Image (tube, rainbow, N blue to C red; front, side, top):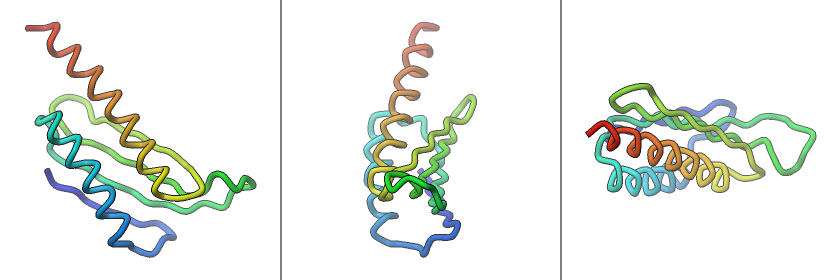
Length: 101
């Protein structure tokens, strides 16, 4: 699976990329239909201390693309929540596909 990283108002980070890659590789093991992942890291000024570090992940696979976004006080939590949301969406899609067989 191809993984593309983009940074907006954030310095690029090998550590964040490694963490995202590990979690995406785990998804790829469960769902072999994944083709590509676009991972976006953004920083936003917010009034809350618990948000502002945003991680968007867009997955390309057969059918409509899947997308998840989360905002926390650190990128690690944002990555984890986005991956969890994508896993829920993938599970739902896989169940729908199995009903058609």
